[in-house]
Length: 231
Picture 1: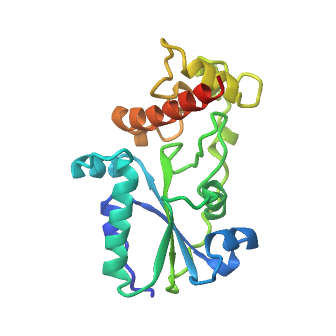
Picture 2: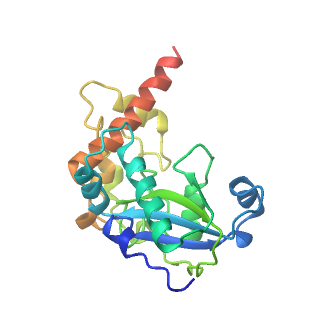
């Protein structure tokens, strides 16, 4: 399957990919994702930078989850074109609990940051996991992209001082401080993260304001829903 092409995914902004041999993954992960052993490869798909959002916006999708909808259609079209007749499943986006960060670490994409968003030297924090695709095709396995966390060489760590909630002050991220501050009517972080946007790693890939607002509006809605249910 070495002749499989990914240019259509690149054009759609799905420019991060890692292929795993399912048999080489940790047993618990394999059992959760493919309990019946139907597939032999896992394709982790992500995006870095602004291109994906530009494509989603151009597509004019009006659903509650336009990025997920776009990704599902794009990957289905890609499988049909590049792997015709091959059985596949898409656990994510979906209801299967997928360890995206664990897969990202295995791929060499993901390092922890003080503000608890994955970060790497190529994209900073401006990347995300978008899909997990299982296929019954022996795609070439991708070597892990080993590298150190850029946070290790960041002496000033401006993200810590920039956080208006003080959620990073004690050396450990305080979810309680973060969520309490975000819920304030005059919060600077209702639809963004000041710590994240203050990070000096790869600022040229920063999402545009509309994408940032889309993502953080969704997370704020979840915070409000959880807080409301606890009353």
